Image 1 (cartoon, rainbow, N blue to C red):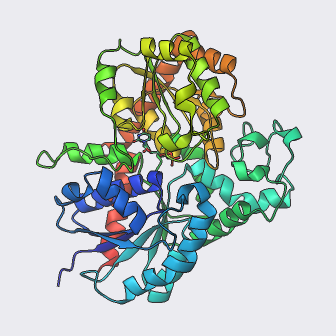
Image 2 (cartoon, rainbow, N blue to C red):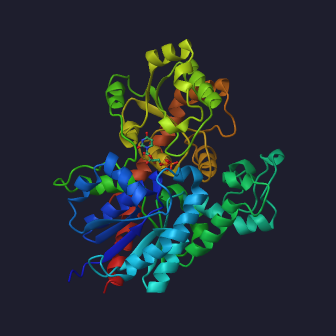
Length: 471
Ligand code: UDP
């Protein structure tokens, strides 16, 4: 029997979390741990279609994937109706997960489970079968801290709030009193009803996190140190091991026999944009992408399009086919926009984002402020314009502007003149200032991953703790 420690990883079945949990899996495989990656059948089918997951992980004999039904019909939009996905996982996937753990056909005894902290049922099942659990959260520590403070915010009647008081400072999130406004709280706090299912879910799932053996976060101490000290008062055992994508790149660089990191994409990447970028001048392009879930209306699309074209800057724009509410938008594009785009822009359905952000032609990122996107941008020293869509993104975008000074927050507006001016500000008026600041933060992200750095040390500690659990 193989006595290596055996970790079971269960991510939230959405692009961002799957992406970072696959990176974590690979980091554990590199440390010679066995990994079973449990993923819903729906996500697994998409990974098989668009990523090279099978080839990539064939390098690691200790890695296996097990798929599990999420209980939803094939044509369900899942991420777009997250609450339905979440409820179905709890009702339908939970018993199947318990069966998987109990039936003993995973190759060897499971040492511990690393599961997304929002999937509290994994903690219940693990407790029932007597396996220790680590919770992973794929949002920023700051946002998680806001989730932890929800009971206090409700008690103080900070939430829910009305639309009239968006600029009031929030006094009940310790460490963020000087800059967090009502408008920067997660989008669901704007609900008029305290029984809002999102408010209740995030409040409850945070209580679950405190039951885990430890909390793994995709962040680094130099970025979120002050907030992490607050978090440690409720969750003392925190492993900050991010930015995960770069942590993996760094470890792989020391393993010349392994191929470089691969794409975990759930969409087909259009690599022609890399050739387009190669032809652009140094630090001249703004990359525009709103991640894997955000959607916009036809009108918003037009405001962004005019704003980008009128800014006079070069742009590379990801427009996911399913991200625009109106179906016929492609047939109604005004001539001046097609002309402006031909001259200075390039549009794709999905891009190899990490490579795009690392490209020397890119000097700015107009982002929806998803946590992976922010970390990828920080690591490459690319300043940001944030246009948050929902959940953690409202908090993240405030951090970018007010706490880290790495860019500009454009939340709650969608006007072509504001977009044009903000792009000019980032890419021209304040370009040097932002690039300098971003370069400084990128250097500290690189330092935390090198020998003796905070994330480097915390990953070693995590691996050490898993190994000692297996003895
Ligand atoms: N991404 C990508 N190509 C794109 C757009 C996004 O590879 O064209 C990746 C991006 O690198 C990131 C993930 O998709 O790792 C998006 O995660 P994030 O947390 O930023 O946002 P979400 O999609 O969860 O809203």
